[in-house]
Image 1 (cartoon, rainbow, N blue to C red):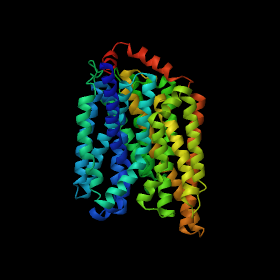
Image 2 (spheres, rainbow, N blue to C red):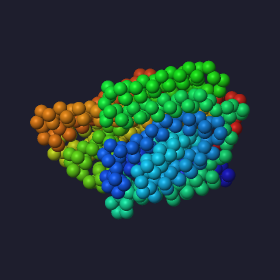
Image 3 (tube, rainbow, N blue to C red):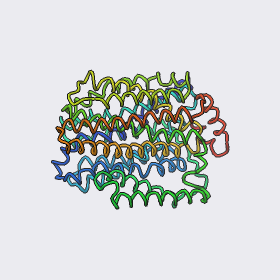
Image 4 (tube, rainbow, N blue to C red):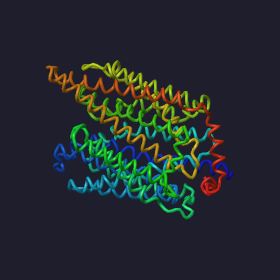
Length: 492
């Protein structure tokens, strides 16, 4: 009876953790729909309005690695709850903002809280579910939340902005944050961290956080400042110098923020490369297809959200058991490659979408294939990134893979947006009508995104070991028996 209750409690804990993560994922896209209303209400200029998005991305990308390591050192539940409180309070500040400065500052704090929650949540899930079948199911649910949350955000953002006001896209986080906090306290084991006298690698934390923030800043402003401008090149160059300094520090310090030996695990290295390319392809799908539907097909925000519904339904079906069964039957490598290649075909279909496209012929087929691809590939990517990692480093590995997705998405979106803008400008200069010029730019972006997804699938199938979840689970159990890992695994 106790075992049944404990098992039920674990799955309830998963639902609560995923609700917290969904709140973070939603916030990356729910704001996009409300930007015109925010601009009108608070008097933002076209240039300054972008900081409502960029302030969040800057701190979110910068603090993922540090957030994951803090969870390893001081306890995943404790750090998760701290990040949740920070995110919820910052949401309140965003919701009541009456000035540009307050909103942008609160968005930056939101990004910090969101980074901590995202980095630690995956570790908590991996430590709660140690059996291969249960872990595959749990990761399927988590993958759906991450992959489908963005398109849900567009639908919810349109609904809240049109029926209430833009303030409610932030205020809706308050009851969710309070409920997630209370349920996490009741359901999650209060495991100790693995500090054991270790000190936080302050020099490493400062250099890697500054490096990531400068890189994100350079990328998100690349289109506006110009990719060959002194500002962009200087920021990216400084980010590279700080990254080199970080690697040097990590190779010499006694208790590194990120043990470099982690990347000797092939699964970690390959999964993160795949994650960067996959995130770039996902951003191509989500953002570029939303722009195509809005600016070319003249869809309303609500219609755009509904257009993503077939893909969300397919991903939900995969997350509710099908993805886990596929992973248990075929392992990680084959579903990962198959899913990414299906996504590549879906993007290739979007690359031929015409100016006067119809939903049934030109939108729905790509959405279906992308839903299938995301549902099939997301779980294996996450499992590959975490499967061979010692439980003591699970927070770090989670932060690394989240950073890979975030940086891949930001860099990929910048590259795709630049390619689309250049193609559109060239067609416009040649005398093409604006809808046709926009479509030409989006078609090119979709084609590049398809190449990213196909390359990610090829790398995965060639370089990942054909290990089953049962094999990697055995590795985790061996690692969990090592000194220093007993406390966390016992509690999970």
